[in-house]
Amino acid sequence: MAKSGCPDKCGNVTVPYPFGIGSSCYYSEWYSITCNNSTAVLAKFDLEVLGITLGSKQVKVNSPMVINCTAANTTWTSTNLGGSPYSYSPVDNVFVPVLCPATSLSNGQDTIVAQCGRNCDSNSRRYSNLGEEICETYPPFSLSVYDVNIAHSNGTCSYVFMVDADYVDMSYVSQSQRSVLQVVRNGTYIPVRLDWVYEYLPGLGFDPKCSQSEEGYSCHCPSDEGGNPYLPNGCQSKISKLSPLPFFLNRKFCFAFFSVESVGPNENGPSAIECWG
Image 1 (tube, helix red, strand yellow):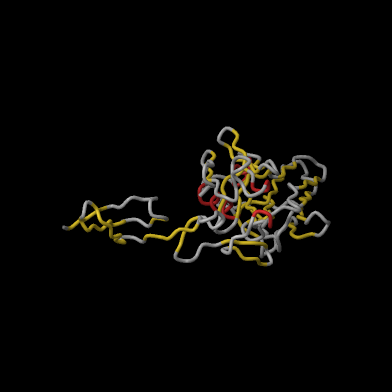
Image 2: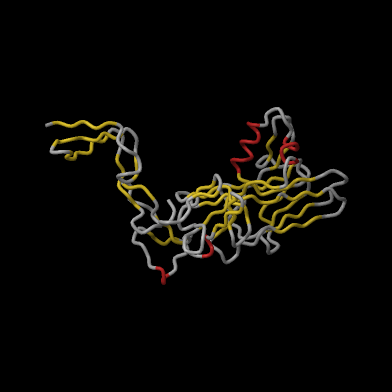
């Protein structure tokens, strides 16, 4: 649910408030989305947006993978999210060096948070459907920036990336007859999940549906309501399946029956109306 009068979609991406397209449609510039030829972009970081969720508070973006086809060591640094409401999710992303080249992932301050040598250990080893050895390591904590260090490749290409864990699993399933190397060679960008927090700005007012935790502010509608808790009056009562709604029509007593769950009184019309009198 977008702010009133604001577009709620860019291409196939739904843009709910506090995100918004246009200067008066987002909560702050951190949540500004630009829509370029039906492509949603997180304006502050120029990252293509693939999806936004309010419940899990995540933004899925396209991020480049690191490719090294040279005999030299390579270091690559991710987009720096420091000081923003965003961080790289440690729960829903995995660090994946394909074929286990000698690689390491650091937190931008020379602290190694994940690594993979020529031989994967038993905790991180996985195999594709064609038997390729794939290392997967979950970051131990949220990262605002990370560095990928790849040792020289001895003439073969190395592919290393932080990636949405669901994407890796779906790649194994949907590409069951294809090499994982073929999957990663098909493109230079892969989906990554960013956790986001609600950056409460005192000057813009505060909603009692929101609460503060160690991770930041979070807003939720009551259990018997749906909608968007980040909007004023954004939470609306639910009308459950087959719930009758009584009313009078032309001096007759009527019931409107709703066959699907709807949020608010007018989102879905009744499936049937019966009147007496």
